[in-house]
Length: 306
Image 1 (cartoon, helix red, strand yellow):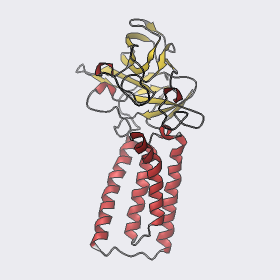
Image 2 (cartoon, rainbow, N blue to C red):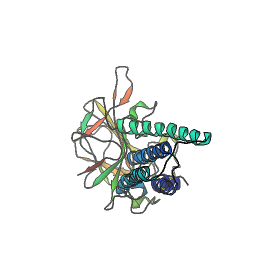
Image 3 (cartoon, rainbow, N blue to C red):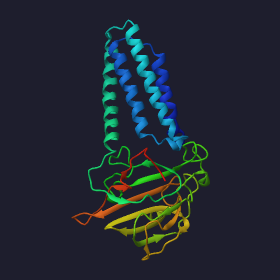
């Protein structure tokens, strides 16, 4: 059911908004303007926020820009040709007031999604941990509206990111909303060390989940993982494939060395690479730090190819 709702928000809702806008006859100028602003704001927010490869293709998001053009174009034509009046009934005025309030809320969400693509904290420079494909950032940024990892606790996850691999047509898997791990393009991809460092700890015995099932204990919530230290930062990569880790605790690894295979162990509903960097602040609290890959800081819906 959750996947169906997720797919509807991405694909069904935009078409529903367009259909409603085109079929509903405007009765007032202010009503037409406010509804145009609301619908375009919702579509643009979905363009920024949506995780499009998970519902078919990364490139579906560009269809929203086309829908926005259709709605704005239709509004201009109607504004010029229709004989619109001021809203007369109290119910129409209340409806317009509600539309304005919702529009302001959605515009604020758009603003936060855009603001979340920029960072003010000092970033650490690392090399991208995957090779040989086009990779999609499904969750990252400096605002919680586009980064699911930003929360009060644990602070070490601030600026963490989730990464998927795209297929030829821009999808994260061979089938839409597939429950088979092997259908995901990133499953069992090799993860490479992003820096020279020391392996602080590893875990490799947690079973991979099947689809979105997460039947694991709290102590195995991170699944199989590698934790290493480099340049004063602590790099944590969880959810590796069971028995798919190539390094051992206390070993020294060079940048570019294989660490293990992408899996779906722990609290993970789909194969992906979770990647985070953190350091101790002046109060000895582990806090997340932004990450640069070859000079680029990535946020949700960014692509990285190598």
